Length: 193
Image 1 (cartoon, one colour):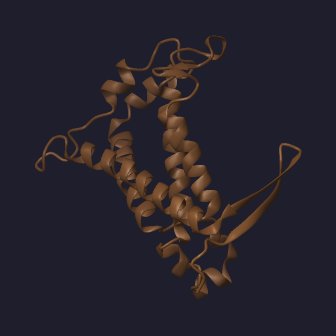
Image 2 (tube, one colour; image 1 turned 120 degrees about the vertical axis):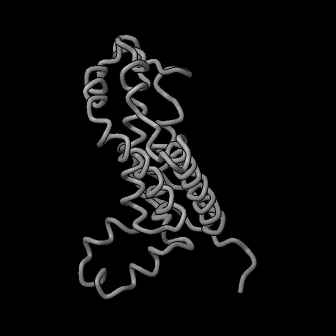
């Protein structure tokens, strides 16, 4: 068994240009696992904090209504959509809370990883658009800069982890992909990885 990290060459076409570089498979695997665990923690912590905000006796004390009604800038081109969401807290709140918990667990254990990464990216895109302080003419400023905030970073990170199939690295998806069901139904691989 070699103790040297194995190197590979990535060759792809990106934006009409050929891209080629060497990378270490070992360090790529460690970095994907680390990023997967960190993103799992982000979602799991956020969901559990919301779930337990009112204490054990009142698990749904957290509400998105205050944020949706008061924190979205009027200049945000989607402010009307978020105000509309505020009318459906009985649906939105559990989707956010339990969505974050389930996404966090799926990322942590590498189960249905691509589906969880997609759902997390969708949630992050909603948080990102909610943070817009203005529209296109204002450059979509957000609280901590123009265009880029942590939600956008998380969204892109989840896209990358899903593209690489990070759920296969010490994850349940590796075993699931070997099952007869997945072999007989190749479409199921879109949810795994």
